[in-house]
Length: 79
Image (cartoon, rainbow, N blue to C red):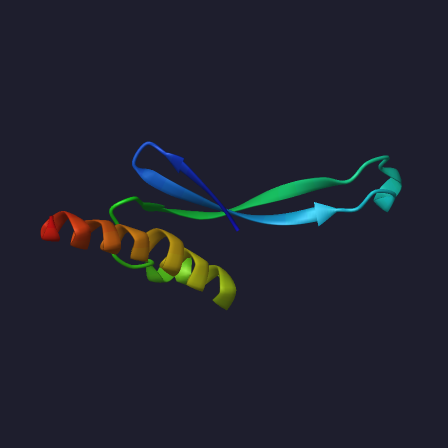
């Protein structure tokens, strides 16, 4: 899963690797598939996006994007 921040949204992409020699290509490369996006101030993953994510991807989004936001908010309140 790759995340790109654009303005006020996180855009989520699923990455797959295309191997060298497949269908006659001379080099391998990564392909990105757009999965969805969510606002940077989200507190949870919207149900329509959650249904597109695998369990591991969901945990990644929840842990990296949402929990880091919650941690930052907590630090701002404490200090």
